[in-house]
Length: 136
Image (cartoon, rainbow, N blue to C red; front, side):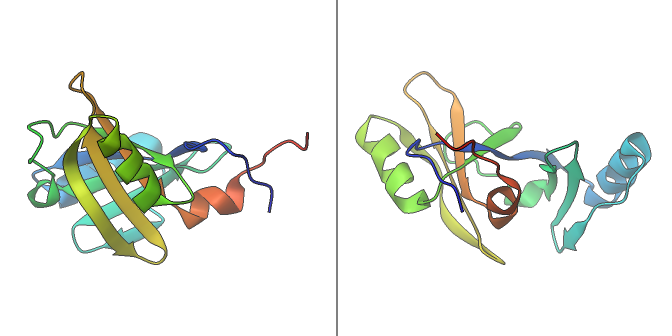
């Protein structure tokens, strides 16, 4: 596997929140013309485009609210969520959503940067599987 030394290696997942997950699932399936590839209680996920980018729809009851922001969250893949999360906190970010093991090799966390933006980080096996890093 090719890797880089960059902390944020690439876009891993965009998560939207919905009060009615079933309605959101049906709406996005119709809009996109595809069914979600992954479904679990409180979450559905679509893979989109040439790089299988992930669009997750999350039941709003799971939306992080500690930081005051809970719109769409963009998650960047990182090989070490704990280290990246700690580094952001050491640089003045605040916890938005603590480190969470999501199962199947997925781990997420998010911080609110000093400017009010939410930065999500994720360990994402799908991203690694589909990543292509040019050889130097």
